[in-house]
Amino acid sequence: MTSRAGSIARGIVTYGFYPASLVGCVWATLRLLDAGVEPGSAVAINGIAFAVLCGVVEVLVPETPEWKLDGGELRADVLHMVLTNTIPAALFRILFFSAVVAASEHVSRFLGGSLWPNGWPLLGQLAFALVAAEIASYSIHRFLHESRFFRWHSVHHSSPRMYFMLVGRKHPFQAFFTYGGRLSVLWFLGIPPDVFALYAVFTATNGYVQHSNIHMRSGVLNWVLATPELHWAHHEKDPADSNSNYGDVLILVDVLLGTRRMPPDLAKLYGGVG
Image (cartoon, rainbow, N blue to C red):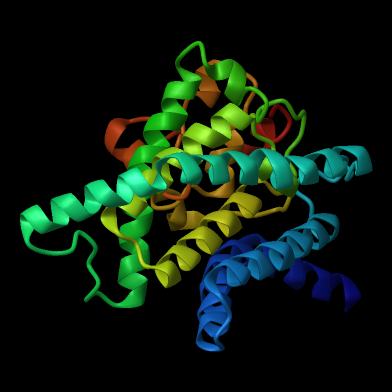
C-alpha cells in the first residue's frame, strides 16, 4: 500500500508539479494583491516560499538521486541571487528607467494612446508581457551563447548538475544586460505594477522549476514553454547541443527560428549536463 501510494505521489509530481507551480504562483500573487500586499512584497513572498518548496520536492522526487544538495554551493548561489541578480537590475533601473519611460510617453503621445493593452483581462496582459519580454530575452541569451561574451554566461553553466538555486547563478554583467533588456521592453510598453508582479513571479517560478533536479515530464507544454526538459538540454556540456532552447519562459521564438531542441534520449541527457 505504501509503495503504491508512493508511486501515485511520484506520478503526480512528474506530470503535475510543473503546471501546478505556474498556475499556483499566479493564483497566490493575485490573492496577495487583492489583500492589499504591495506588488514588490508579493513577488518576494512568492519567490522565497517557492524556492523552499522546490528544495523539498528535489529531495523527495529527484530526477538524478545521486545529485545531493551541497551546502556550500547553496550558500554561494543564495549570495548570487541576493547580490548579482538584484544589484545589477537595480543599477540598470537607476541609469535607464527615467529615459525609457520618457521615450514611452513621447511615443504614446505621438500615437494618441497607451502602448499597453490596459483594457485586456489581467491574464491577457500577463501573456502579453511574457511574449514582449521573451523577444528581448531570447535575443540576448542567444547572443551570449554565440559570441565571445559567453565567458559571462558560462558562470551560469558552471555547475556539474542541475538544482533549483542554479537559476540565480549569474555573472553581474549578464544580469545587467539580460534583466535590463527585458525590463526596458516592459517599461517602454508601460506595464502596470500588478501585471509586472505577475510577470516577475511567473518568470521566477519557471526559472526555479526548469533548473530543479525534480523528476518531471511536460508533454504538450514543451511546445509553448521553456520547460524543464528543454532547459536541461540547454545545459548539456556539448555546445552543439546547448546552443538551443534559448527561451527564458516561452519556447515560441525557438520554435519559429528553429532553435528548439527536444532530446530524444532523456536518460542520456540527464547524465551529461553542465
